[in-house]
Length: 327
Image (cartoon, rainbow, N blue to C red; front, side, top):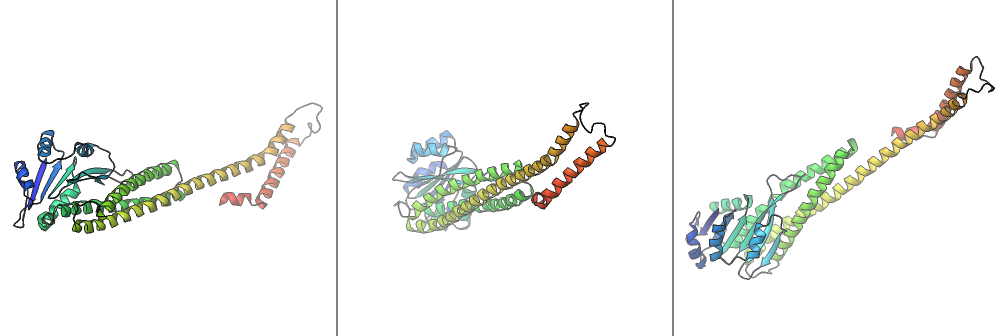
């Protein structure tokens, strides 16, 4: 589907213009045109590329499902590929949707295969205030990118809640389930950091006046979006350190509990070792063996084992071994 929005020199914004009017609108440099493509058909793309010299490699990047954010200068226009937050994204599985943008002297083309909340927000903005598109294609680009980056912050709030939950769980429920949650969350954090890092580089290039096609007002606006991305990358770095510390704490807790269990087993093994020896000796029923015909021999053996066990228990207790296990 293709939606054509144009700025009227009289000061208004016109929507749902016929596709046949695009060539005439492009030639009129007093007008600003925004062409929004939502999963366009091959026929629609063929017609559009006959009017706009969109490079095949850029269109291939738009069709690609997992391409890193990037910016390319094709002389007559800029091609920008960004990633917005998928509405179904969560702290456990961070997902994004690609948005391809072609920024020309008097036009902006957005290409997305799925619904784009950022494009819808920009459309609502220019409906309320036609000056959004009247200020030029860079103004529409700023509205799209600003809302796209702002949608990252609710996800960061989910990440903060998840980090707190993991930190509480590792002390109360240090099981393999927590370990799986930590690794899933760490994977989501790394993906967010990678996407945000690439997009920060894009915004940095837009704010350095590197491209003549980007006007001064757009450069100043993009600094605001760049600051937001810096905050996002800082947050992700913080969360990555916190989850790494949580993972180390989890492994330490598991290791300490394993050591305590081994210590407890060692104590019990030490307690029963002399008892096993005594039973083993008195289990050798040789006819000539002393004490074999004692009337109270059985009671004597039990008393001997009890005394030995109690002595070892008091010894270990005095050395503080049981106190360490209780802690």
